[in-house]
Image 1 (cartoon, rainbow, N blue to C red):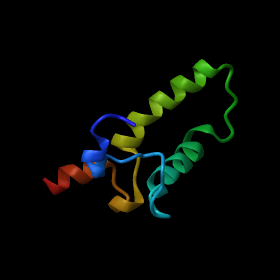
Image 2: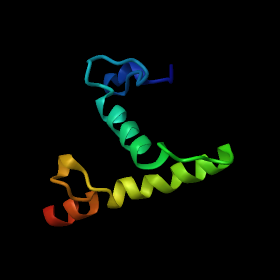
Image 3: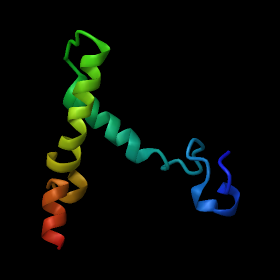
Image 4: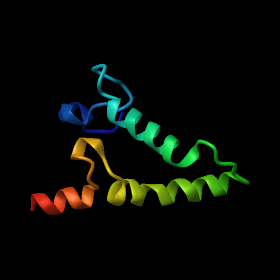
Length: 82
């Protein structure tokens, strides 16, 4: 365990779920990624998969509509809140 973790309980071990909802955001993200990008796609190589996934991250974080944000993109949501 990294030095100092015991002095800062908020930085505990991320690999251990403490509540049943601890992993819900990641599960939701991976479901969206698979539905948006992977299902029905034939890839020629692991490198192609890597490129596809790296290109998905900017889309997910900037342009994809999120139901939790009222079906707006994160960029649009933040701009309207400012």
